[in-house]
Length: 363
Image 1 (tube, rainbow, N blue to C red):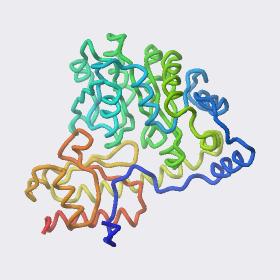
Image 2: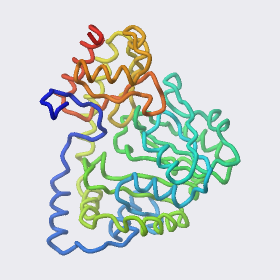
Image 3: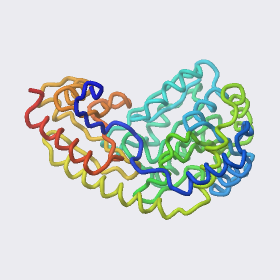
């Protein structure tokens, strides 16, 4: 539509509108000028792995650096799943989770976590989903698409269930850890007894506005990290040496920017939630992390005659030129995901278009 000159407002992408910090760009430039342009070690450069390990109180040998957090997930599944192995994925989930599992020959098992329970997996639901074929639990906190943030008590309750199933690994996707509006707790810290069964996934994309640099990492038990390194060695080898130098600068340089940007996102969040909550047929919980809201629009759908959230979002794009993502894409229909990682101007324009759409339908 934009190619045709149509003014489309897109609030659909999980990418912060902030710029990469200047000192990070300078570090990348210096690395290139200093000749850091050759193949890096498949597992990642030693300085970057050391910095990652220090921040997580881990051993550098327990760290792998990859071309984005998505590759870390893929490496883990390719290195560990046999055909038909099951992976429990709380829904709503990031859209890539089921496909990555299926690509590795596994079977994704989605467990619905409705808004009434804060979009969080309960111990009872986890226990009910476990079978003899279960190999992994994916746990994303704070989460995409809804910003759900598990408390220490909630993580401990899940750990108690997992303690009874020693063959199940946990993939803790903590890519939004620095974007938590209340206290963040890492699963590995909450459940030290499960340390040898936990893979932490993180990266620089979201917190440091470095989505295009493509650096993510995994922290986990040495045998798993070794197997993931073997997989990566036959697919991409090491991540970009220049990007790794930039990531090192991000982790070891000034961190005050994180709090400043989090405050901006908090203000945007509060404004978006307030406006959506005032719209007819919309129920919008306040996310505790990340930069998404995941409002329930079933009331609006029923009032306007839409049977699916996909049709609702398609009409919103066609008639009001606003792009958002239907909840069904994340495994929980009746919702939509809207990112507030955009400028205040774009958010205002987008929310005004939703309000007009709800007021006039798709006429």
